[in-house]
Length: 126
View (cartoon, helix red, strand yellow):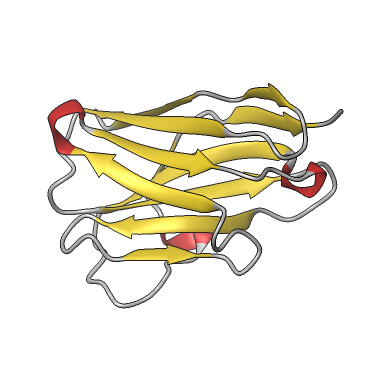
């Protein structure tokens, strides 16, 4: 059974950094895309970043470009989201999601993902 588990969330001061992990089990990362989404209270789920596991292409929301970096470790079957220069508006529950049919070339929307993790809370506050 396919499963995604996020970790690495927490409380951090503005300007700080966190690294989120998305560990996949039940399948390898060879043929899919993994996306990171976030949802703040009262807000819609927002796409943050995505990595194509076919060719390594990456995509970022404008709000996080230059601050967040998505990467993969195939040996650990894990995708990471390195978040630097965090702002209070980055506060949200962060989810990773797997797309099992992605063919590349764009940032898949939330409804295009088949599997979701349980989420990890990120709070940016002084």
